[in-house]
Image 1 (tube, rainbow, N blue to C red):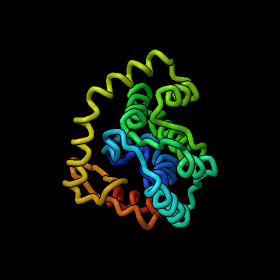
Image 2 (tube, one colour; image 1 turned 60 degrees about the vertical axis):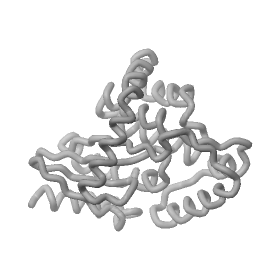
Image 3 (cartoon, rainbow, N blue to C red; image 1 turned 120 degrees about the horizontal axis):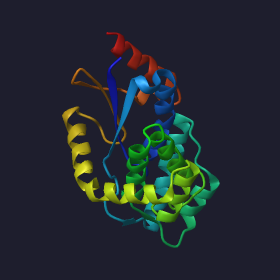
Image 4 (cartoon, helix red, strand yellow; image 1 turned 180 degrees about the vertical axis):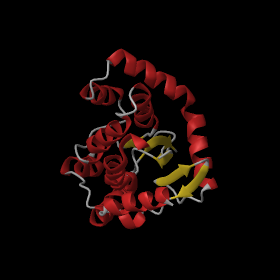
Length: 213
């Protein structure tokens, strides 16, 4: 099987958090036979301060995501959204951390993304903070200096990477984050993943059918 899964995402996107079990199911089903390619589109390309009027909207949306996909939004996260004196979202560093980890070890990119999402959505940590991301990298046994250098390299090219991600989304008629695209023999197939929330095996079966065809 010679196929790639292009994943257009953002670490601070709730629906991308919901899609995490889908990616895990694909990894478990196909392993290294299905190459995972990350395309961060930068939902929060510049730092955005979330005002009080928008915070309850975020929590309401997350509760709906939890009901549909069965993912957990922790009490620490909800408390931070509601009560933090300043709540600022910025996708650059967590997105770069996923790409940097993947560049250092392709088997760890998805694990880094999941750690970032768990830290944000369950533990209520600031994953736009370099110290938090470095700690996560150390959890994956990445050498701190190598991670810092890879992170710096990615940050320089991240604006271009984000533009390319959004261009790919437009080419395949994707509908925001997340967008999953299967590539075979140079052809791209947009995957309908929405019906697989809470049922990750459905997406794995769908990919298997495309590959078999």
